[in-house]
Each structure stands twice: as C-alpha cells, then as structure tokens.
Image (tube, rainbow, N blue to C red; front, side, top):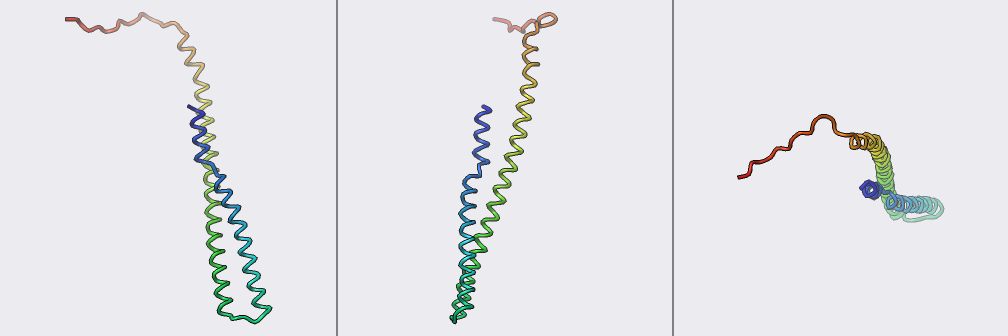
Amino acid sequence: MIANLEAALLAVMDTSGLEVEQVDIAVRLDGLAALMTKAVEDNSSRSQNQENCQQRFSALEKEHAEAFDRYQTIVEEIESKQGRAVQMRHHHKRRRSEVAGALPLLLQSLERPPTGTPRELPTTPRD
C-alpha cells in the first residue's frame, strides 16, 4: 500500500512534461528575440515602410510577451510541484517512522499473556 501511495505521489508531482515545455519555450524565446533584433537592425540599415516594420515588430513583441508569460507560469508550476513533493516526502517519511516505532509496542502487547480473569462472553438465551 505504501508503494502504491508513493507511486501515486510521484505521478502527481511529476514535472518532466513541464520541464520539456519549459525548454521548448526558452528556445522559442531566444528565436523571437533574435527576430526582433534583426527587425530593428534591418529597419536601421535600409529604407522600409515604417508602418509595416512597426506592425511586424509589434507582432513579434506580442508573441514574445505571451511566450514569456507561459514560461513564467511553467516555472511557478514546477516550483509548486517540487515544494509539494518535498512536503509530502517529509510527511510520508515521518508517518513511516511513527508506524515503525509503534510496531514493536504492538508486537509486545500481542506477546504478553492476558492479565486478570477472562471475562465471560455474553450469551443469548436460547428458546
């Protein structure tokens, strides 16, 4: 039962999918930042329609902001899951040591002969 509980906790606290997404978004952020830099450099080095250039830059800027917000959310989710995992492991470890500490006492109580006179079990009258 304890092994099943530990497996369930690990599944709930798993951050591997979030970590993969975090890396993907970090790569995307780098690519968007490079495109934004290139757009600024292109605009300064050659004559272009400023309205088109500004629209393109604004679209890149918006996409970057959205990706960055998602990145921050993922970081918070990972930290939250890792914090809960630490708390759950600590609680689970404490409970296991409490159970392990109580086990010898339970075994001792089962090994001791009963003291006093045994009680009569109540009987029901038969008709």
